[in-house]
Image (cartoon, rainbow, N blue to C red):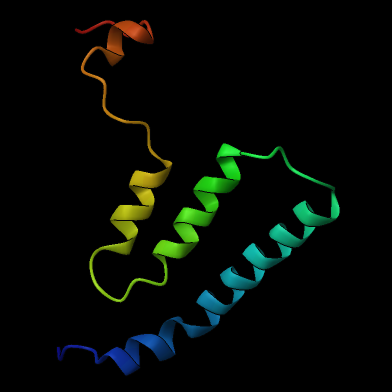
Length: 86
């Protein structure tokens, strides 16, 4: 099995990516039409940061976007959420 070229991968993924980008654009339009957001909306700021990350040309965009939307690791998370260790 030969490795796929970047062009091959792009051709395979193009329509799916296009649809997802349109979906994001439509959601942002609905937010805008609904009125003004709080001055410093944390959720919108995370979305902006993630969208800026998508424009990177190097590095792991997927990993970075995941980190943007993740909570920082807390060693005592089990106690905080009432999860018992077995």
